[in-house]
Image 1 (cartoon, one colour):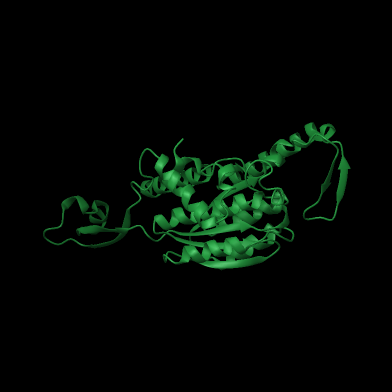
Image 2 (cartoon, helix red, strand yellow; image 1 turned 180 degrees about the horizontal axis):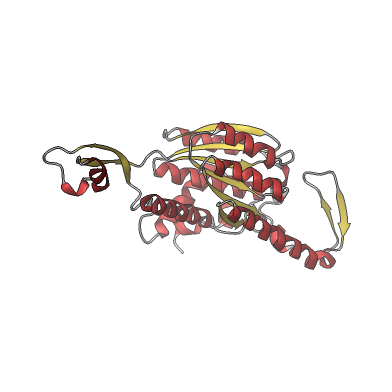
Length: 309
């Protein structure tokens, strides 16, 4: 494995404290590993029509317009620099799992993994000259950094990520509809969360964005422990968003816990599919290229849909 590619591994990333360096290494490593540029075909998009003048290439004439108007118009194109993406990062207390013993076990804690994912996506968007914004939230919006494509904007965004510490309860059902009202310009919404909320309320909240014609991608981040329940000895479990403690023997709970976890993930996947939302499950032990590859696949899919339209 090349030096750049190994920076996709969360265990390696955990040794790098600076979030900006961590994200840059991931993005560069990811691009190095691609067989071809992820930006091929994304460079230009249709901008407007203008009347045909002598010397224009015939191939640029819009024949559909001619058939309706009996006049020749030429399609003009411009560089595609106007995608507006807002990253919605869950900064509630449940996202703090794994932060305290980070480094003792596999890779990053849950919030650090999610924040690194957000920073990587932001750098990828900047490379494409797209505008990116950041919203962090728990029970309410804690930060709303408007989208920008200015080169200095990424430094501010990463700085805000580094300053954010998970706390308080989650209330996606209240936060997302309010954001949908504020973010009126159509764009891409990237939600990064463990999604520990009531499923019916989550479905309705996500649909608020789709009703306003936003594209939505959900990165569902869960800690490796939450996915595998590796505990063996008597363990005291403490609530992160509720005041509760339970001392139990984990092996007696493993089968029922994993069944409940599988149902939860299935319900989330069904919720996203029903709302026409791309769903990407991520474990804190997954290389970060899983998020970047999913983002690029989403971009390719939406570009094909636009071209067919």
